[in-house]
Length: 351
Ligand SMILES: Cc1ncc(COP(=O)(O)O)c(C=O)c1O
Image (cartoon, rainbow, N blue to C red):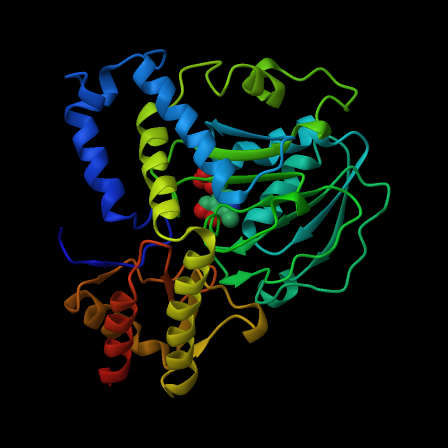
């Protein structure tokens, strides 16, 4: 493998095991003599892949009986509307913590009364609002667990009397959660799970079938539940690669171990950001993300020089998103701590 330290926000670093078995499956999938790109999704070999992906997800999250696991297309962006289509009867509450939440709110407004319970927009989303009330008659409360662009993360989910729906696109599989705190979780695969093209949805099926509208077939979670995510042709390669990552998580200590390693990586990078006079973090300390660390050089005129130093040290994907500027170090599960040390080394020797 080439030893580039990949800090990209997404599509992002994946475990070497995921890449290696995906390469193999591209050439000869499960002993069929055919590429995974060439076999029917109805073949027993692919049906087994889908079944294993569902089971691995159930095991990782210790999902109670009433939860279904789906692998859908259209990205997390399609979930912004699918959630509302299926769950929003009259009113929903949303927490606005960044561009992705804002987009989810925009879509939900097409389906009913949407109350934004709190927003950190006025501070360029550099913190997670804490004191807010969710309407008790809301159909659900929606939040984004990790704000990929702004480098903030919800560390303590609010207790909600209504079902909680969460966009976990950029921190799924990164830490322990209590699945039954959530009515629905969705996550695009392309940060911590697999290639773009597949979106994981975990849904408490008792929440479905309650809205007074006709839902188009493809937008209806019940369609995909009844067909085991095979109502139409699934993105077979993306599901296969995602399965490899799910099994890698299980073989490497599950969410508990992922959380431990992710905390260690983030902790040493944030210590450097705080102790190095040249840099400063952009997110409020208590809300900093363990996945995406956002920081700037106090003297912006040095930005290009720092990027060049990173490139020379084989550090890639470090340029910040345009709405924050500076730099963003994304440290998903597959990143080893030595990559974080490589970045810290550049920060320490930079002048
Ligand atoms: C938190 C979050 N939600 C949603 C999205 C949008 O995902 P997709 O491109 O799969 O629609 C992203 C993409 O970066 C994201 O980080």
